[in-house]
Amino acid sequence: MADKEPEVQDDLAESLNDLFTSLSSMVKSELQGTNNVLELLEKMNLRVAQEYKGFGDVASGLSVFVEQLKNKSGNFDEYVQQIDAIEQQVTEFEAVISVLDRYVSLLESKVQSVYQHPPP
Image 1 (cartoon, rainbow, N blue to C red):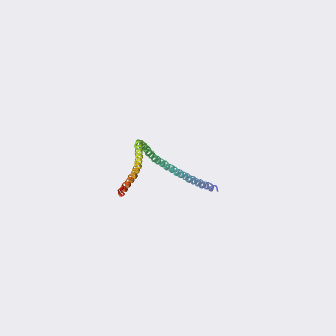
Image 2: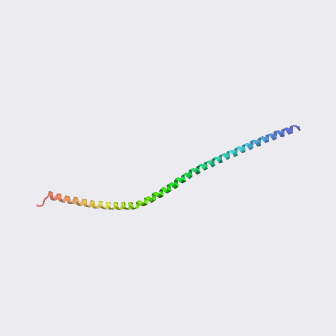
Image 3: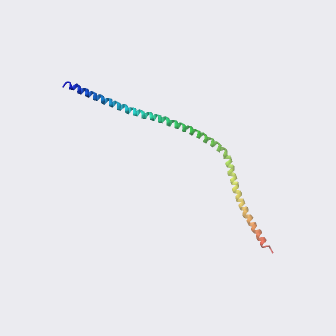
């Protein structure tokens, strides 16, 4: 019986050794998987950072362009005011022309009535 006990203990030790080896492999695999995921996330973060850096460059370029447009449009304010004044004058001239047109029509009708009905 004494011979069987060391044999059982050897089997038990071997089984425990296999269990711990398997458990160690499993933990290493899990950690490697987690490490791979973290490396992928790091690469994705770097890529996104590069993209956003490009967007920042574009945004600052657009900001400069908008500022230039504002400066140019500021130069047109004087012309816009002149155009508004001309438009106002045209509206006033149209009103005067309308009054004159009605007056001319009235005169034409008077002249026609004089020629159609000459005084005795």
